[in-house]
Picture 1 (cartoon, helix red, strand yellow):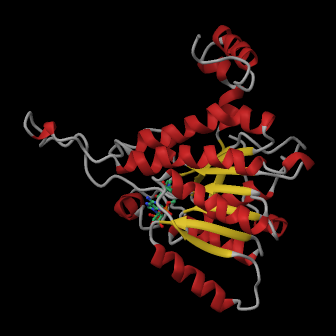
Picture 2 (picture 1 turned 180 degrees about the vertical axis):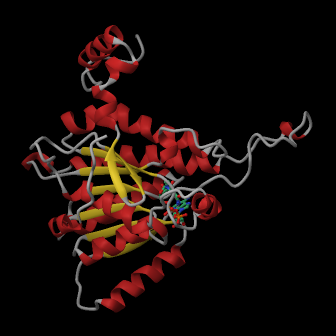
Picture 3 (picture 1 turned 120 degrees about the vertical axis):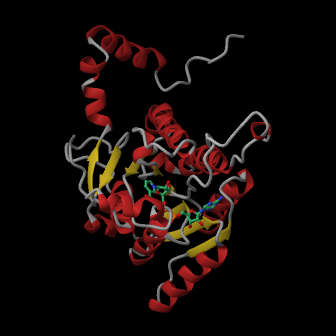
Length: 311
Ligand SMILES: NC(=O)c1ccc[n+]([C@@H]2O[C@H](COP(=O)([O-])OP(=O)(O)OC[C@H]3O[C@@H](n4cnc5c(N)ncnc54)[C@H](O)[C@@H]3O)[C@@H](O)[C@H]2O)c1
């Protein structure tokens, strides 16, 4: 897999850029907020933990009282369409544009949907769907709204990007994450299904960061397991740096647009998992199916020249 190197030197380019992101009260998104504020970007974030968000803002403002860049947390629940809308509206109203959007907020498994104690009686009660609502529906809402707000005023070729934080559970089995895993596969599906449309039609780069275990509150349940098995651990800032390197680096080293990249992050190091997967599909799909798959891509284009249902 080609390495993808995080590069904090590139964050200088983020000065005065307008960012919208989900999460921010703690963990990876908090680290992203800190880097953005330090880079003098304008930051509008939404986290269900409003107190936590306010504390992050107060601490950053106290560290640098002369900074004039926007740092705003709005009341936000990723599950609500209107809250996602309000986040983008707040940034747009203040600055007349949104340059970069980052979807980071998520929740993990709190109960086992497949618990062995379930029986013909207890299976009657439907399970909570909070993981699906936050990690999947909420991200679909966010991406839909981002596609409209990011493309406002980008006729002049201004760099615009959408970055989605997925997981190793977006592309590998992670036993025990029986609902989280499908939602994270789902956002990988969102990335794959919209990448041509976003970049070729709307001029929005779309990328993903898919970390292995991170040493945050969400990761605390498996932290000891990772350490006991000698597995590499990410810190929140490692993942934040990969996210912001994607946002701040519009071109790949070969000069092509930096879009359609899915970075796997393990122990602080990153690799693009998508490029080689595409390049090697003749090996795992077979020559003929690989050729047909390429033809299907051409036939479908950006997905707007045909209708999914026949009238
Ligand atoms: N921690 C890990 O081991 C790990 C591994 C792979 C991927 N990830 C992914 O990385 C991202 C960041 O995770 P983290 O480790 O920083 O987790 P975290 O639990 O530390 O932070 C998650 C944030 O999301 C917020 N949040 C939860 N529900 C919300 C809602 N309904 N609306 C708005 N905000 C909400 C929380 O308040 C919190 O601030 C997530 O997308 C997660 O799935 C985490």
